[in-house]
Image (cartoon, rainbow, N blue to C red; front, side):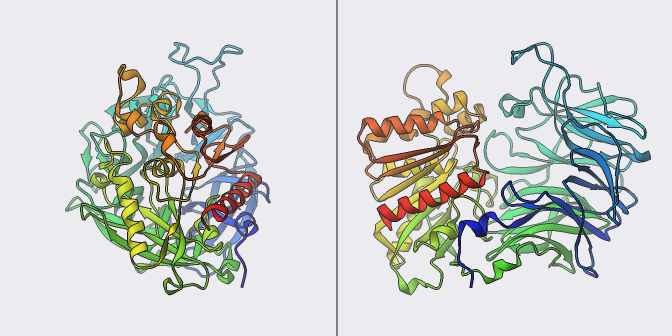
Length: 610
């Protein structure tokens, strides 16, 4: 058997960017390293029917898109727009070497691209709310023989947030006033663009965070489907909106008990992946009823859904297998890729599903990991509560070995690890997700503690050896738990929020964070909801040692949050450590930073609560 190690996490390969040929016979996907620094990414090809083994076509490839002929891919190869044929030959289409964020094949051998605006900013100046219109991403077109993309003007200076092409070349574009989430995501509009004529039809405003436009046809009309935050909220659960250009949007998933994560056009109209508790469901829209019906269910996480010629493919990770490419055949997912076969020899910790009741009897779910080779009868164990981000995130029943705070890493050290999905999480519908609005850290923390109580009561967890950790919103909730209860012996706060007033003022999401907690610093003097749910306000009440981990270049949760918590803990004499990672953002992506965070967190928890 293979032991769990940092090398096991960082030296593996992973799949991404799955795409299915228009005739449904071929699947392409990108294979790359889990963390930067290894061999270059490559595009792989496989027959959808499994009649031959997958094989690589070309290296240094990203954004593979099938041509309508289904016999070649248009991609970025070494950053240049190129055609890759199934024999591995590569033909460069344009010497343009600027940034390209999306490739959309059009009829006649043309391509629509999303490119960076080339309008220069004043030297040494960065301008917001200016009138020169510089910045953001633009739509451009490359036609046969063009040396460089031609930027379209129909959208003016609006930032292109997402785009999709239908078979006749008409584009659906989601645009923002500005390229930053704050305030761009609040200003989303839908446009139908004719690239040949360089004209755009404005179809109106979209709900907050509208994204992933998909063209589909119901037999009579063209529709554009999108995923957006369920109105009227600006934070929380997602829904599927459907728009016939010129008409009002229609909600296709009202009062749903699951959450859409991805959409694609399918052979019969529209398909999508839905987070459903700990599982994922692929559904297709029944045009006659206007409702989604189940096509296939998989235990764990399905992502990167792709469709062509009626063939559906996706990446799937289940309890003990990493993300690989699967194709749907006769209602079942069949494996296409096998990027980490050695994982089948790893001594993983036992992972099981868990359910419990909150104080108000709300049914909750999550996962429990036990040390390799151990069972609950071997308890009680030291228990680590590991909290997910979001709060609109979730734990699916997938392999929990894919980040710098990897649950399997801690289980291997002897901890039982609780992975809870408290209210606010994805997978239970928009109402469940929105239930934390105005009650952040309230019933949400109560849900977590109820799960801990259940494990203590059945003898799995040792009440004297409890610890808590998390990243992003999970880091906030870990700090909050340490401040509001004395039950935990240690806490790890990764990229967490210490002060919500500071967060709405300087964080990447701004008003979105303010909407989550119910107020912002600009609302006027006096105590506000954001003060009452900020861990730094209760720093003096923390009794557990705290480890703070943060990327120095984080713009989502700026490193000032870590500094603030560090200073508060120092003033009150609370034992703690602060580790800041230069060059790292909200997620630690470099191998050195990830390995240090993994080892530092595990050593800290073993020292104080193991």
